[in-house]
Length: 413
Image 1: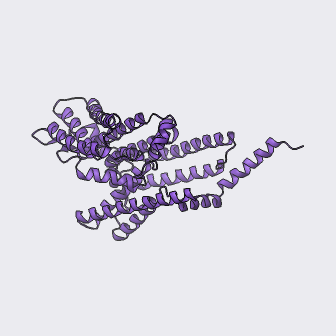
Image 2: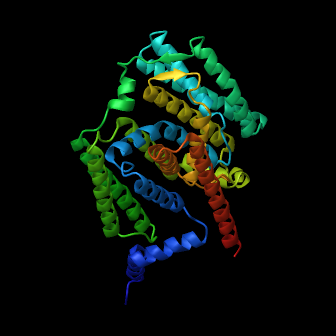
Image 3: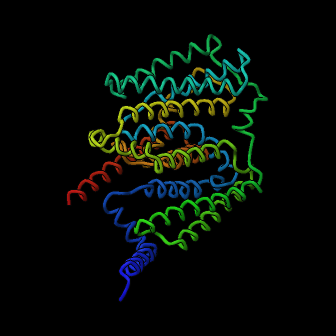
């Protein structure tokens, strides 16, 4: 007499093989696209198209030197965009991120240059200022019900004034040229050996995390990819990262600051996908009332996200000050708000809440910085860059609206 448990295990193994086959993966991907679950597909396709277009216009665009500069220039506002992704996941908005970054940079510069504070303490004070602003926003939103649009619009104006007050009559503060922060932002790069080790480590960690997930799914009698397919993906990841490291090493290599930005994105993505707090963020953004009835502390979620949004704005302001080696009255100006919010939206974060990924800050920022770099290389004026950026942003929002409509129609069907 056959063992029903063994028969069930055999069926589970069959499902594992079926789900990991290329045809099954393709069918699943096409099904998601038809239902409006576009994910990162539009921004990746757009990024590839942008690179092809600009490379055809100027062969220096994809040179190792230009790509290194592109990565360095992306990291500052890209760090701010991580916080924008978080706030958009709740269906809210923060219009003051530029002003908050300017305040944080000003606090850093004044404490470091005028008051002689140690670098570490000056950085902590700048980040604490951003965190305090975010907590204030969260309290105004949760305790008094003031819309986030109004709160952050008021903050944009108020903290712009505070920035001018902190900088004082001089208006510009130059950071010490021998500062370790400036070295970190512009002059520190991984050695070739370290970059290749990092590529192998990334592939190994990917394999270990995915294998752990597979074991849990098998233990719960759920289908999933096979270990073999995960191993193949890990090898492809290592080869891809190793080639990227090799190509960037033809110039200066992988900068400390872009690496810090990418690692921060990965860390926050893990928080969103692997922790109860992250699941609560998506739940509140998807349906606040349903989240409240399920026992989620909705106000705590809002407070934490507002605090993190301003914290990342402050961190971006510190990195921008280091990259520019100075803080001025124009630091954190209109361009910062435009680019940080646009990057999150272009990267695929929904304006309607509940859908998105921190990788939107990475790919969205690369799209915007690629447009800026490409247009500069072919000698196009700044006004055209704004027009192109606006068109790309409008296209991204339109795609988001259409995909949301497709998901709604699919759900009703």
